Every structure is written in C-alpha cells, then in structure tokens.
Image (cartoon, rainbow over all chains, first blue to last red; front, side):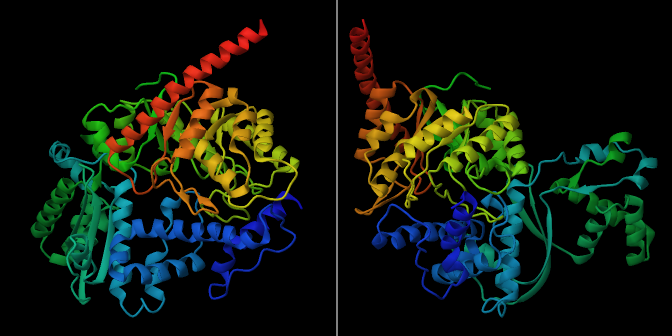
Length: 271
Length: 287
C-alpha cells in the first residue's frame, strides 16, 4: 500500500468515531496490518482517537474557561465534540482552534435558546485575541498636544490590532466577571451594551462598556475618516458645532489614554 | 543575547514559570520553547520570549511541520518558523518524525509512519526541503507510538536511514523510546545501541502514564525509574549530550523541575565516568 493511501486510511480510523459519533469505533480493516495482535488493536486505536478529541477539547477549554465553567465538564465536552465534528481544525497551530465556537453556540440547540452563552464565548475569544494580537506603536497624548492647529482637520487614526468592539444584547460580561472571580454567575438577562476589549500598554487586558454613539464615532474615525470628518459626523448628531468639536476632542483624548489608537501617518508628518 | 553552543541541562519554558526566570537567575543552562506557542502576532508571549531570551540560550521545538505527511509541505508554516528562528536565534530547531494530518486535515497529534523504503525516501526529501528554507540542519525527534505498521523494518533502522539520507540531526527522546518499546515489545537498548549517536544533538526526558499492558506519553508526571535507567544506558554509550525534561501538563513549581533536572545531572556525570572507562578500554584494545 502506498504511503498516501496508508495515511488516509489511518486518519479515517482515528476520525471514525467523530464522523459517526453515535456509533462504536469501526474495526481496523484487514488491509492495514499492524504488529499488535487483533485483541489490542482497538485499544491502541482508541488512544489516537481520544488524543484527537481531548487535545482539541483542551484547546477550547483553555480559550473559553468561563464557558466551560458555566456549562460544566460534561456539557462542555459534548459541545466541544459537536464543534469538532462541524468545524474540524483548519490551521497548523492549535492556538486558533475555537474561532467558530461562538457561532456554533449561537446557532445550535441547546445553547441557541440561551444566547448569553454564545455572547460569553464571543467575549472570551475577544479577550484571547487581545493577549497576543500584533504589537503596534500607539499614539500618546503628548504627541497630540504637538499637533499644529491647521493639521487637526486631516488627522487620521487606526485601531490598535488588539481592539475588538462587541455589541452584546445580554449580560454576558457580568456573567464572565462573576465566573472569573469564582462567584456564582447572575441569571442571564437582556442588557444591551457595546463593549471595547483590548490590551493595555502594560500587557494586561481591559474591557469596558461605551455609549453607542462613542462606539460609532470610534469606528468612524478608524475606518479612513479624518478628525474633521468626525466633527462633521457629530454635528449631524448634536446640531451644535461647538458641542460636536468638544465631544470629538474629549473622546479622542480618552481613546488615546486608553491606548486604542495607532500613530497615524498624518500625525507623523505634522508632529 | 546568549548564543553559546548547546551544552548542559535545560527545561521546557512554560508560561507558569515566566516570572521565575525573569525574577532571578535559575540553575538551568538553556531553555526549549514550544515553537507553535510563539507563532502569534505579538503581545504577552512575544514580550516574555524576548525578555527571557536575553538571559538564556534557547532551542525551538515544534509540533506541526507535518514532516511525514503525503500532503504538500505547508510552506507558509515553515516560513513562519524561519521568521521566529531569525528572531530567537536558537541553537537548534526541531520537530517530530511523524505526520499530523493528510488531505488537508489537521489532527494535532503525532501520528506514526509505516517503516518502509517509500516513507524513508519521501520523508528524507521533505526534510531536505525544510532545511533549505530554514537554512540550517533540522533536528528530528522520535515519537511515542501505540500502533506499529507490520513491515520488515524496525523503528531504529527507519530513523537511522532517514537521518543519514536527509543529513539531518536527531533529538533522542528516551522516554518515547521506552514508551514505544513497551507498546511494540522491543528492547529499548537495541534502539540506543543502533542509532547513529554522532547525530544526536539533544535528549528529551519526560514522564508517561503506565497502564501495565501499554504506556501513554503524557508528560504530566516525573520521569520514572525505568526511563532514568535507559538515560544512564544512553549516556554510558553516547557520552555527553545536552539533556532536558519536558513537562506539558500538571506543571509543578519551577524548583521541583530543577530538582528533577539534578537527577539527570547526577546520572549523567556517573554515566560519563563509565563512558570514559569504556572509551579507555576500547583504545587499549585497539592499541
């Protein structure tokens, strides 16, 4: 048997129970010969089968510690088993396994009927992303202070790569905070809010809620629009130019202090 | 950045011990990083890697090169490993003599190869391609196996043929030899006696779970007596080889691992005396 056929067959045997989850493992076909006697082949194959499931489940558990805490071992393992079936790993590094977990929980029963679980998973994945997202030089308040008056209107910004903006409908973050502190979680309830999740300069993760208009403004100014455009955008909301400019300046300073913004090309030229 | 030649006794760097290594010097000659844990864009892992690298020589050890697969090489992954090696400047870059998936699947497990001439040619060719990209010799590690394809060849013959044909180097995992020997019923000393020791650049020691009729390579407990004895046997025959302990689960405080490393130091120094005597005897016989 050629190497490729041998490997394909061996792999099918390892995946067998995952593909037909409710059926017992298939017997090893006679055309894959091993030195181990028949009686112990199934036991040895199970070692590979279990390793596949356990390694992926463990990767999920480390990325979604609070979802695991909320569901408990057995339910979490069942969810993991289904995810492995629907979304087998695609990347060389196991670090990225779990990207589909929030969507899976959102769209499949019994988790679908409790949307806070999927939102909790979304939050944990954003926290995981913040830990090892790309490093990039952030703008500082001192740099902003050096900007010349005529340069302000054309200033552009980008979001730091660690930032995720989430619009959640449920109290998933409160559930996370309780579980993360070892406390009983509150009952899931509707609590619509926008959340910013990011890595601070000191490498610690941060998360905070923000008003919808602030989130819209942040998304607006980090998608190719200038500070002048933002002032015009806010003027549409406030109908008062001084209030719009003041609010834009306050937010810009806050975002800068939080480390959400990157140094822009326009600022480098001017500052 | 410390870049002296690899020698002495090392440990696998784990996040649980980052602060211990930064707080004060530890009795560890070098550290092995898990390559795949640092193939990330930035943030905490890279920060700690850079800081600790300033203090300790490092080697890189990966799990996902998929060296033995019949799928095309994942060139993007290998170039990522190369970029990390450029950053870390490791003394060695290693991965496993196995496959981790075929037909695009990623099994995230170290699957066994059938010991055949076809596999030798295939794997040796791929190792040479990888070495061309990495611009250095690759070090390959023998894996623990639970099933062995029925072929006329033994694992040590297979490993020897590949390293000779690919002109690569070996990371000898003494625990894996012991586990595979128990699972496939061979004498692990035959393996040690046969392997080309001049190509062995590093030794791994680790704990496993013993279920009487088979063993599983779990890396979650201390090295057992049988593996220590096999290590002693290896050093008696091979001489001084840089050695480290791998612990991937149930990770104890760093000082416990350093104490365990002291056992390796003691066994090695005792075995080296015998190795020198053996060498002396052979020289005497030769003259």
